[in-house]
Length: 183
Ligand code: HEM
Picture 1: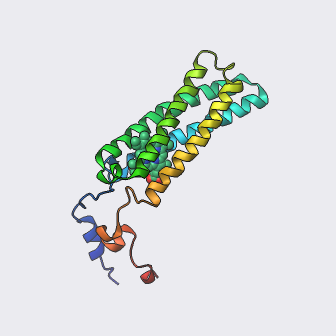
Picture 2: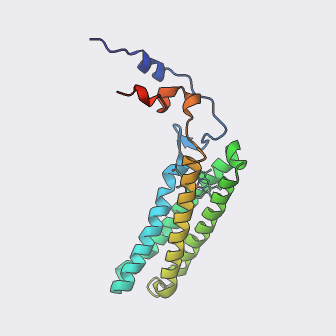
Picture 3: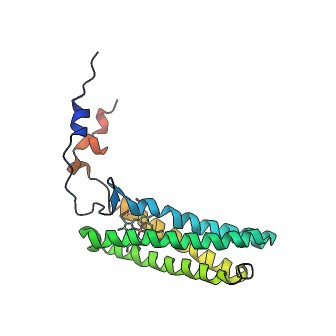
């Protein structure tokens, strides 16, 4: 039995879709770079907080050093994520027009400032820096990263930033086909 290959050929030879009002402009093969990078500062913030808590519990200097490296990594990857987010704000017309995107940017820049402070505070004496202020900054960082991450998710899942619209992209190819026809 021969399979119907017309759909596959059509997909491969499809003309590039013109960019919409909310489509990502800072993307690699259509996948937003910001979405790829934000995982690193988010994971870094949890790493620092976990290391601080472990140091508090054990007083083992290994965990204080781990927090120092985690704080540096979280800040540097946070800068890369913020740059890509800033690029989206400048290049995506629909992003600049929506208050939600600016709100997300402000929360994220506050987070970036706390990430920087948390790293700088540890550089001179990473062990003495943990209790109490290092731990306090890590707690604040967790709150902010949760807020920025949750709000970023809202931009994508509610406002549909960077999400190809099924109507524009041709029903089933974008995953927006009629589910009633799915076997
Ligand atoms: C380190 C700081 C930041 C974190 C942790 C963060 C977090 C996130 C997350 C989790 C998403 C949803 C991604 C997805 O699920 O696909 C997102 C989307 C977005 N963020 Fe951020 N963000 C940060 C910085 C910024 C900055 C500084 C701006 C702008 C000034 C910005 C603008 C955007 C925009 C426009 C989107 C939607 C489009 C896209 O995903 O590219 N972000 N952010």
